[in-house]
Length: 206
Image (cartoon, rainbow, N blue to C red; front, side, top):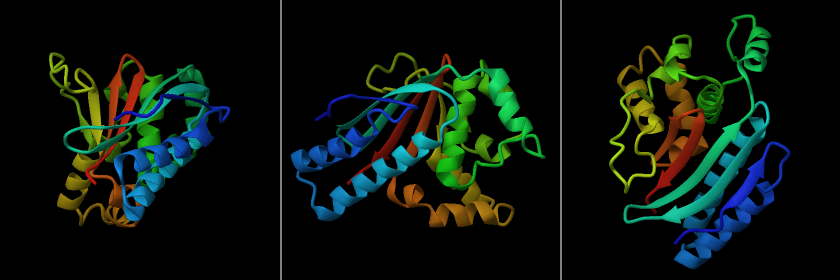
């Protein structure tokens, strides 16, 4: 089952339809009250992240199911350029985006960087926490069954595993993960990056 594709932009158009689609999906798939609430919370976290994205953007939102679970999907593109991003970062005394707090803040930062940069990996050196979840090896482009085939991937699951492994060095980040709504609800959040376009997937096996 796949919901309608909702058009969303930085002016807030379409955001109110996201939760409508979440409720429709939950009803169609026979989710119980707890499952429906978890899906809605994941969608609310997604809406919150979109509201904080810098610059103009256009996105398509939908929910779909597969053999292994439910995916909340976003396809994004933007007109934000390097000069504007540079001005935003220069406002910080550390010359970096200090607003990237919390798990969804970090995911938002990955998306913003990806939408702006021609080569994201060249500009993640000052974002070592983000690098921890980045898989620079693109997935097999011939894998037609994988919607992110050929994309560079940032994965919350990989980030979470690496932070856990080095918990003594990343106590604050581990604490963020334990307190994060999305990190506790989603089995994984993946940010696919290709040609300055971004595909976001929040995955949950209900």
